[in-house]
Length: 392
Image (cartoon, rainbow, N blue to C red; front, side, top):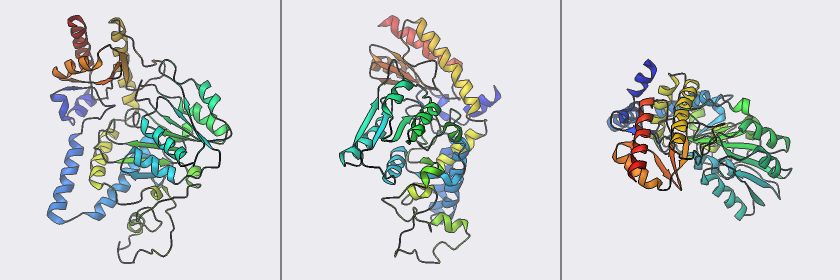
């Protein structure tokens, strides 16, 4: 496939290793590395290219908005990572006395900890954890836990533990029917799955850029829908979170520092930039923007979803034939497959010595391909797993 060969030519690691750990961190594209290098060279030789950085922050928001079908780039905040984005959002929300929050046991820990922290300060009364069964949380569990006192439901779009693709639209419908907002962490989905926040009824979405978006650490995004945004009241802010921030001045073609910044009053931005607070990690966003530009040239993520589905299903069938139990629910999965193994670190280390990269997890191996991976790489992984089983 011509597009696959072309995509692989932008990813240096494929010439050295079979890299199947995108759920941990994707490989950095040549485009991202070149963009960072060019920006640093410009900075070193000419001084900080501040206005260029502002333009690229806006451009990055526009690309990300396209990836998730957001209403506007102004519904997007540029932040330093998923955790920062979530906590910035939560700090701007008001919780009624006696509120509870519902989270999934399959979520990445960062969100769960944030809600425990809210509870410890008395800002919410209870954190309700929806329990998983056989690698997924039944919708009936959300029906049971979400009630009229639920302020919000926080569910990962795809579980980092099992690769289960949550039924976000149905969960959002349950949440909305009881007056709650739906927030999703899409770190294990953006860049490889088609996401439509409007179709799915998502009120807010957070992510970073260093997994399937193939960018560097230090950049992330928050999407906030119009209804939720209208209710936000930031508890913290900074010079990028105000109405008269640098981007707004740039968009009005003003000289950025011709007028003093008015510190006598506080007017937070009316768009999602109210969550941005201070100066962004602009170098990270240079890399993230370059990788998003690359990915969107390949009809991402619609083509990627179908392609990686074939890789995962090939793995699932073959792993089952080896007598190993697949722990990913195959009726609703993404580009992650997990299977049980008695010595996951031993197997992962053996694979690593043979230049195949996967992730060992408690009692399981996690394999997470992307659209640049090939069926031949999957077959190499399976060959080595067979070898290891026979020798151990």
